[in-house]
Image (cartoon, rainbow, N blue to C red):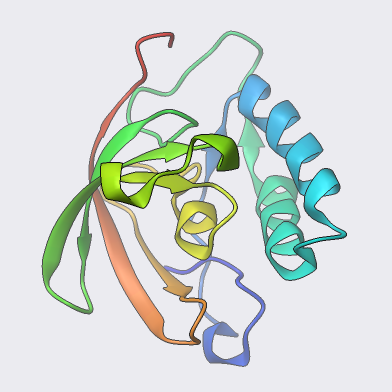
Length: 142
């Protein structure tokens, strides 16, 4: 399954069903609008994901779904490696600490993904990769 990352290489592939909390949806919508001037391609991809997401009622969280602040483990099917990361807002991003910004191609691909789902995404260098979400741990404030 793949996400719409606006490339011909990904055209025609299925999109996995994604779920967002109402809180994440609201804040990410504002972030996408704010990023349109400086990062129009990335902001547009995030906006597209938000448009097609199922949004949970306010206060509800899906335990097996990536949300902002989630610590997660995924397998890079292309490279055959397993990685851990935390999905964060841009001002908290620090790749050396495994904190991935939601305003990156992989961050957009991960948001709303459910354990067991696989996605195809495109790196900033145009390389198409596939990953499978293996585990999600929700943030302490969840």
